[in-house]
Amino acid sequence: MRVDDELVSYVFKNHNNDKKSILRTNRLFDKFGNLFEEFTSEDYVEINNNRKRSLAYKYELKKVCNLFVQSQIVFFIFKGAILSVLLYGNAMSRVSNDIDIYVDNDNYDKALLLLKKNGFKLKSRAELKNEHHAVMIKNSSIVLELHKKIYNPMINIDEIYLKSNLQLCDFYNQQIPTFNITATLLHLLYHFYMDIYPLVDYFIFYKKILETGRFLCRAYEIALFSEKYYKEIIWDDIQKDIKHQKLHVIFKKMILDILNAFPNAFPESFIHTILQKEYTVDKSRYMANYLLNTMDIIEEKVVNRVLCKYVDDNWNIRKERNIHKKIGESFKIAKNFASTKSQEELCCQIETKKLSDGIELTFSVSDDDLYISATYEYDTMTSDGVHLILCGTEEYSYNSIFLFPKAVSGEIKVVPCNVFNNANIVLDENLMRTAFVKNKEGYSITTFFSNKFIKDNHIDNYFYMGVVISDCSRIVKQRTREVILSEIGDEWYNPIYFAKIEI
Image (cartoon, rainbow, N blue to C red; front, side, top):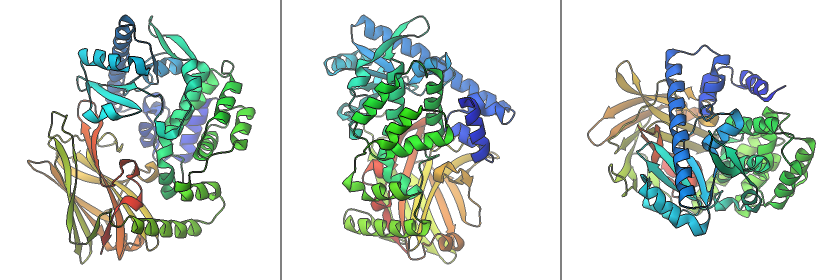
């Protein structure tokens, strides 16, 4: 069975009731949407907009490469439009959201200055301190990442093989340096690993990796690339490099989940390497190390009990640094964006209230540029709104709810959507009601959780609450700013860093 057929079969089997949603989340709707349902006029508008965006990135990529060549800056391109050409033969078949370009340390400052002279601006001053890359934006629509390193240093990947295995790719009659075929597949594997590595504990709270984030898209592109270039890929090099790397056991779980969706993605020798490899143990993530290795065999009630103790014990260790409030009290979370042209501070005032028939939470956001995504879209990265995560430990419960402002019958209403593992299920009013108010400073979203919700989720006496305020650009149509309640941004999902609300 070909990879495309395996994807269609997988979607029918696992997402028959939310086919459009899962394809949109994984940016596969343009390619596969019409195999499941007839396109509507709105669908064609979306597809056309995606192609226009990809076309803009195609032309900008060529311009940037010409600038670097003329200035004698050694560089290479990866991901984005160049990967679209390698996978599909053209730059329009894969939605592009940025340009990724690598230069070495000797050329970095020169490249940064060159881009600034040609219309690119740093997203913020903090970008200069980023050890991975600096995000730059041109005309509020083209995003470029100027890389110091191919991967975030936190995952500790040795990049020697990748940097040593380049080729020139014919990109619309222009020769552009990028990874060779073997290095491209290796990069796709490590890039997927980089995306999931910070969320090792996130997968524990969610109890699975599969379907988290854009799993299906990444797994599909890896399987498709393997299928297309199977005979050209030097599998011995890939296996040798994987053996050499210090990888967390989450890498093994990632590969097995890819095989669950695409059984023929890798040769037997590769699978043997993955199964036999010794993986590193992160002592600070003993929960992840334990549960990832036993998740398939231990009972769920045991996992729940261990999770409750893990959250309570570790939250109490951090008690002095965490937010601790009684119901009825309020508090504020904020972040300063001094380099942006819009308001400098993005903040949210959070009010809590206990009522006889439930709990009321109000989020007042200082955002003067509200962006509302299409009614049918439930992508948390393409809409303004409030991402609310509630965790109960009297008995374990974990709810991930995004409060989407939507235009409904000429007015703005809030659609509360369960985005746990990309379920994208709109919550019933007997569990949760919402209200929306637009004002001069921004907007307020009020949520009311019924006593049934409280009882079902075991949060009668207290709960842990995480909040992420999403702020999107109406031009880029992607999240460009966010405010996170958790002290450490990468731990936005982790109850250990949440506010504790006593009822």
